[in-house]
Image 1 (spheres, rainbow, N blue to C red):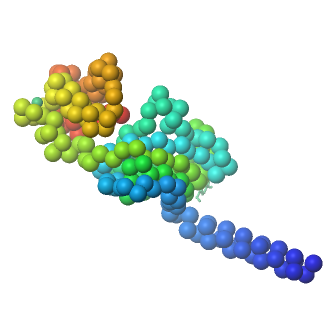
Image 2: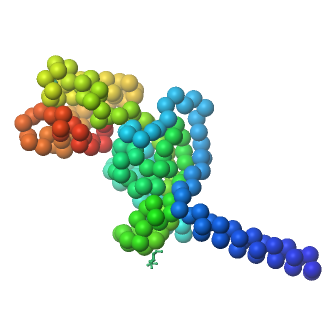
Image 3: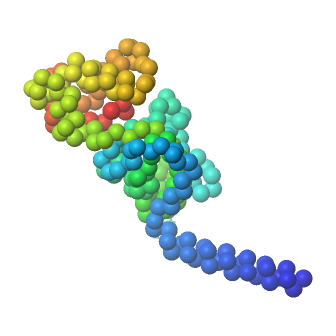
Length: 213
Ligand SMILES: *[C@@H]1O[C@H](CO)[C@@H](O)[C@H](O)[C@H]1NC(C)=O
Ligand SMILES: [Ca+2]
């Protein structure tokens, strides 16, 4: 009886201390690596384009975001470290291998803070289960623009982008029918050819934000 009481006491103390500590350090992103492939030639860094699935939850398990069911289940493309995603994800997806899986716990200060969102109450800690599929180096760099701009006229034609996408798809071993490629191209021009002249200028390219690039 005594021993049991002591054990219970210690358990309580530990819980209190632990809660106290976690409240204190909850300004940082907690990263748990669930799976990391042995072969990891490229690791993500700021400015890379990442292709990932990430499902988000509240601490009580309520699902708040699921990239597997939104956007036709396509993994999402975004640029790391530039605020396209919440700060906690920019931090939590750094230095990650292609194929790696992480569980990332984000304090409210690095998520939405005191602002309520649809499904997300104020001051919520968010938990994301992430699977990273692909890392692409600086898709918006001057260098990549020059690679696409085959004739060097400082603007990207539909044909130049088509050739570039074909290479990309080939490199990824992604088998896509030509109808799909056409849709991607049309979408890229819709989103990026802001003045509608049929070319993507260097300025327009800098805001390139297509899912497939
Ligand atoms: C959210 O946190 C802030 C800062 O800690 C606090 O002032 C505010 O009252 C909290 N809001 C809610 C709804 O809990
Ligand atoms: Ca050109």
